[in-house]
Image (cartoon, rainbow, N blue to C red; front, side, top):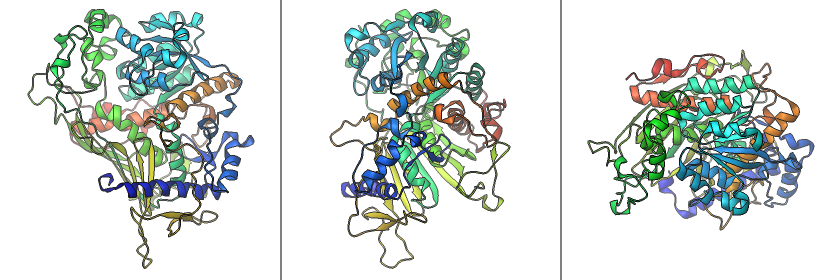
Length: 605
């Protein structure tokens, strides 16, 4: 695993990925984009074939040719369009990331909204890392013209004056559906942060609402727009790893270091809500400015008419919403949903079969004073195991596409044991391995590391005497020009070069690289979809195979895709809470049906 890799082996794995993608691209097998349902398809720009021709021309000479995400994802025709006038609702941690990584040529932020005054201040001034702030992105003079609001109602009352077309929602999880519906009632397109909603019932409501209103609903699982994941998926679709039987996903953090009470600023923070015992990004100090402006009675007024569903009992629950069962979904919603989304993309967006796992408060809340021990309702450690259909579990046509009847894939009764085991682990007391996804196949292993790098290693062919494989082996791809591509060991390095899309952090660049993270591309494509939606007056109609007719101008992670991700994360929580194996039901994934996992499996209080 990653614990065993020395620098030379990691270097070999990175070079192997670039070599393999270059070999496949030169053979014309890397000139497609990948759809939201995991299938390869021709790029929408093939009539203006920038990506296809640039790749082939450059890679024929072994060159590394940069291809923009706009070309890669088919929205390079943006030129000449005006930026979509957008409001950001929720200006905390994730809102700061989205502001710092957005492209003003596509999304012009004209207003921001947050009930917390400290968040409004922070979104302008910026913070560490990718949270650059509006002053830096737009310049202080321009940023002064961006309107601020302390309630969604006040923002929407000014939508006409602002010329609003869309909103980006980055608020606590329990408020997503209420705010999205209000904005859609106002005729605005919605890009909502993940997880989509606190329950699957609310996910279905949001998806139906968008369809009924004829508006776009996108959800921020940014790996759908990561060129690193897209190019990796193209390689996997070429069968480079053989038969995939296991994906090991992990996202570990260490929040166990003691917090220095002397660092607590009594002038800035309210001590009555507790001083952290540990340095913990989820259990933060409560700013006095927020507590003073938002007493419990005011929070009830701001709860969109339903304090039990959409409200917060006090300022501490608002600030620490990820730690509360009512307001957040814990590790599975905040971290696991990303990695399960990645695993689902890799496996072609087939629905999972079953889930079981173990989770709990193994570190926090062990009889300590809740006001001092960073105690929480959500789990601080989880280990879950999913069963997914393998490649042959369902029948496929000659092109490798799933055979669909009645909107569902057709099972192959001869291959019901073809199951892929996907595990996800997350603990708050050790981050030695960090996060990433290990994809393990019969012919090789691929490691997607921290959304910034990808590595590839070949398995040893034991049917061939003297064949080499493993962490140190350099490879080329044979059979790429015809037949099934396969990795071959090589004693001399072949013509290198990636397939041209930006799939890794560039030399000397910061760890945060917009080219591969997906946030910027996600927002750019959302703006493109808004423009195309308006011009073409399209809808969510489906063909007889259950595919969206207008999928090229609908966000790749639209409501139905995001709902499936939420089902994975939230059902895993239920399986851990009840200590049982839960079998997924097809009806849960059908928006038109009211069936949801919480009806059967939510733990009763």
